[in-house]
Image (cartoon, rainbow, N blue to C red; front, side, top):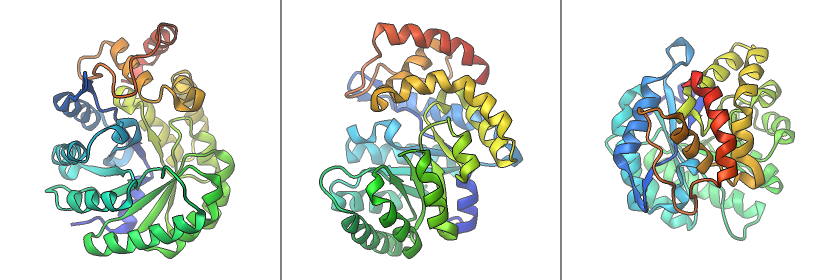
Length: 312
């Protein structure tokens, strides 16, 4: 049974862990992926017995894997977490018809996603087109499959269209901010009670939380789950001092991940996992378009990873 909307929104006011999908050469390591999901589920430090949220999304390299592979990943992940976690599926909306087919297929799985994250659109579009197309898309697949959607906000020009979308569509339940802190207040005020406004630029999220975001996405939780979880625990109880202290610990890793327009978003996490030496997670050998980091970056990550081991 789908979660009640209020329960889903409260569950999303958490860490959304987005694990890297490990590769063995050009092939997805599904056994390694299962190991990473197992680590995240076994190492849940969220307070009040809250369920972990796991997303297969951008940091998982969904832009570089086929529909068949993505369907298999979602199926495997859903079966593995069962009712003990919240499952989010990232969907690339190019082309939009193919995205609809993928949602239809995932909705029929034994353990279907609780929510779909619509990833940034590539190619030419306009704010008017964004609003119209996603209103129609939400109505079609929300009505047919009970699908609920989060919008990943990456283009500032679309801010008013996104606010309209969240207010007008019952199928869009939130927005993930991927632009900057300056957009937090306009989105929080514009969306109001129509959905959750989530921070989407990693664990450096204390200031956004103070401004009104609820929950955040983390690409490093697959290696350092305690850090991400304790940041969210602190924010939910209004303890921004503790949140900022932990954020400062993980900031050097986040700075490498997001440098030069997120150039090492995936590969820095892979390198940190390898350098950690932990045998309960699988890093793989690097993914499509995302090889291992250069030697100078690896040297920086070596010291950073040692400092963060206590958060594993």
